[in-house]
Amino acid sequence: MSSIELTPSQKTILQELVNLYREDETAVKGEDIADRVNRNPGTIRNQMQSLKALQLVEGVPGPKGGYKPTATAYDALQIQDMDHAADVPLFHSGNLVEEANVEEIDLTSVQHPEACRAEIKLRGSIADFHEGDKVTVGPTPLSKLQIIGTLAGKDGTDNVLILTIDDMQAPVDEPEH
Image 1 (tube, rainbow, N blue to C red):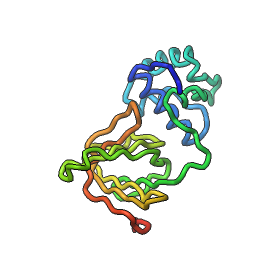
Image 2: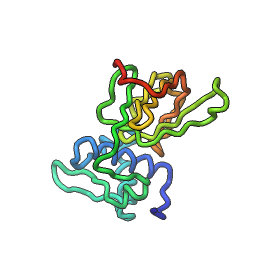
Image 3: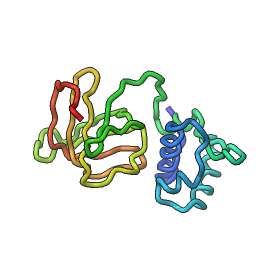
Image 4: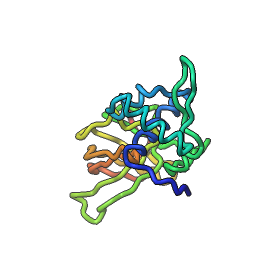
């Protein structure tokens, strides 16, 4: 468990760096991070200096350079970098999101079915998700749980989608998407 305290801004930037790095496993340009978190590239450069000082990021020089997260970064974000994580599919508006995997599902307020929500922690970017989007999670490997919901919000700091649950089924067969 890491004891590094990050600001919400640092955490969001570091999380997006990890997301982008996982897509291609190559150095990530500051401009790409700036686009994803809707910030100025100069702000990203300044934050990267702080993250380098904390040994969470390493700079890669050259034309193909940019930034790479360190093992300490995964620790600070409490991300388990498992090589063989179970595949829990995620569908966004009916389309499979190839570069995402569900890491955690937290059901909140299940005792109030009309206000039932789920928090979905993702491995992958949440930048393209917007309030009101339809999201389907699962089926999960063990219980075959599938959650169908509407995006109520997102937390870029923790890479979490917050869904209002429209339907929940277990067990379910493979989705017909």
